[in-house]
Image 1 (cartoon, rainbow, N blue to C red):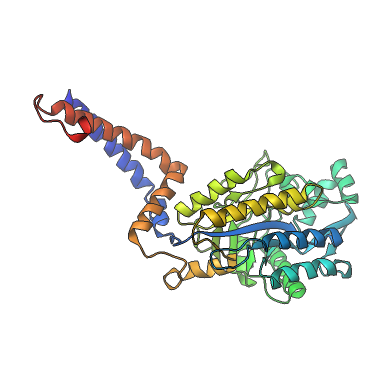
Image 2: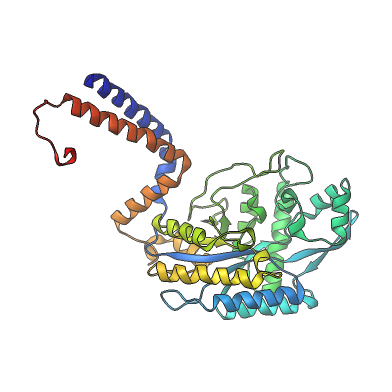
Length: 404
């Protein structure tokens, strides 16, 4: 009986080993991903842009909230503000109009952004010229009365998600890839606009709805973008149901096409959608265990409207508790973080401890669905081997401490 059990366990272990071998590429990448020596956190808030006094007031209030919390080194909490440099203005299917961030009426918004930078609570990032591809919206509006009505009073956040995806043609589903020359022209336009409005090049870019392609990475890199914020996977389009398509897995610090550096944003805190502080704090703590930064997604829509004050209070609570419960916490801008990933051996953000790296890698493995599924069969094989060993032992063998 024990021999049969041992043989079964050996076969299970062999099958597990073969499955693990097939995943060796991901395992190597998880090990090579640098491990942070201390907790690192930044809020990432997308979709800000031309919105007049209401937008400016919301930005000022957010900046004031961030300034109330400091990290272990006395730095204030920081939000990376993903900027759309234009918003659609009332249009028709034949003629698209936009309001740009550098329009005179938007001077109050620019001043609020610059004041946040001066206070050290804002880091400005490129989110796009607009949160859409105008040609796709106009094409869809030509067929859809609801979209034609939307054009009369356009709000990008009210568009169907496929039409909010700037880097594919979402006029029809499944989406279609854009020609490389169009992608290059769009990247050149938005990076030039960022530089013209803010007086410096765009270094960090965040793809709208996290749908983009390798061609976008190459075009951005050609225009000076050095950091791309991702959800940990590159969604290269949307399927017939409108959902993002699965794509290549991404880890922190890996290189994109063209040489930009990836960061992963995968902690979500949207109080307007019912997200709770405790849940977000647990996700932040998990990233710390994995030796990864906690980039916390918290969009603009949370901080405008009648519940904005309550949502800012929730954000402040999250940040205060993180600072209190995670010793050594540092608030770090994504641009600074990506530069550290480019040369981890030269940065004090990363550990050299092999023990810490092993612990972080184990935590990362447990979080990967494809690898986590392999842990179950491994545990079964170990139990079978243990049972076989016990059955094979002489009846009068002394008991071990574990058998008492």
